[in-house]
Image (cartoon, rainbow, N blue to C red; front, side, top):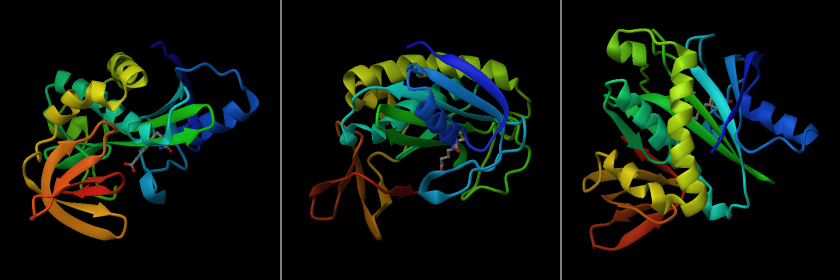
Length: 237
Ligand code: BTN
């Protein structure tokens, strides 16, 4: 997959901006990628805010056109998370994936992903902490590449590298769905086979994490041995 990258100094939110642009530029190509040095209204999942100091981190969004079934969509973020984890591995880190779409390093969040369905496909928004020095503003313990390695990185260069990983994983996802990236995803989930707690709607459920289904749904085995699929929620760490 080919990307068409545009950098902006400041945007409210790269996800929102892409949506607004699509409304006026209906021919915007699949692969359009919009990155901002600063977001003034960065958004996270569950209506949370995504805060990122100007110029320090990566905040960008990608347009993927396609007629995807709704059940197919949550795993777009999972495919993107695999690509982020591969970039981090190449930087010498050992990332872990936390369903549905967080990337952690040493148990702390380094990347969040917000995928949103639109009429012509999906927008995938990625926030990756690169040169953030202090981690006191995210919904859970957070970290950055700088905090983990003690070294600053060139944000533009890392985006170039990340787009290469994304190109491979999103292509796989677009053509074969989650089952194409499942092996890679599962290899980076340390809690498989262990007891986990998952928020399923309003309820908290505990069981053994069996793995993930064809569309990225989480498979949880309860004490009776029955395995149920959870389609939306959060894994508690
Ligand atoms: C989360 O973990 O809750 C998801 C965070 C997603 C943040 C990214 S930053 C780029 C894109 N634009 C946004 O407003 N949000 C996403």
